Structure formats: C-alpha cells, structure tokens
Length: 128
Length: 64
Image (tube, rainbow over all chains, first blue to last red; front, top):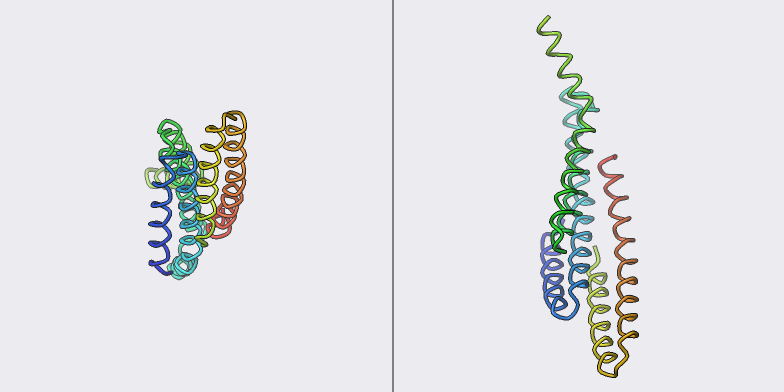
C-alpha cells in the first residue's frame, strides 16, 4: 500500500471537484464519489493480508471462527454504509445520510443477533 | 486504482459545461438541457460500474 498514491489521487480529485463546482455542481459530487470509491477499493484490496492475519490469530487463540466472521462482516457493512452516507451528505442530503447510517446500524445488529442470544444463554446458565 | 477514471469524469463535466454555455448563448435551451442530461447519464453509468466493483470487492474480502 502506497500512501502517496492515495494522497495524490485525493488531492487531484478535490481540485477537480472544486473547479467543477462553479460550473456544474452535480459533476463535483460525482467526482468526489468516484474518488471515494477508488480509494475505498484500493484500501480494501490492500487490507487483505491484515484480515487473513487477524483470522489466523483468532484461529490460534481457539476462538470460534464464526465470531471473527461476524466482526468482519460488520466492518464491511460499516464501510459501505459510511461511503453512501458521506456521498449523500456531500450532496447536501443529510436526512438521507442519517437514514443510511440507521440502516447500517440495524444491519450490524441483525448480523450480531446470534451473539446476543449466546450471551443471554450464558447469563441464564450462571444465574441458575 | 486508476486516476484516469476521475480525469474522465472531470473532462466530461468541463465539456458539458462549455457545450451548455455555447448552446444557451445561441438560444437552444432545450438542447442545452439534453446535453446536460446525457452527460449526467454517461457519468452515472461509469460510476455505477465502479460501485458494483466496490461491492464485489467488499463481498469477497469481508465474506459477506
């Protein structure tokens, strides 16, 4: 992962977006969105070794792989929801942006529901 | 990661802005609107393809 690539791309896209904003504001928003997508793809592809290392560590610690999978999935959901809500906020639609964030939160909770159940079962076992 | 994609979008935006002003000056408002719309649709198609690429990458990396 080369940080200078990301920095150069981001600054270039920002300059182009500012240039376009005075003529056609919609293209400025699309330029920003494209830059965000490019950087996110780059980061996600570059973070593959980190994720495989983390799952290997989880495997060595004898933690069930389904727990790590839940964490990983919620991270992915957060990335996608954040991208969409930032794009909406840039376009001036903060109401839609906060709804997307709400949807992301619920998606994460739904993915983590089995864990809640297990915690509750453990608590009941300890109490009885 | 290719910066050419962002350059493409910016170039389309500049061309559409110039065309828009020329067409409005020559008194063809409808064609100016259509040009803006066509440019917007082209850029949206490009962006949608990239979004689907991003979603595929996230799906494979985070095993969603």
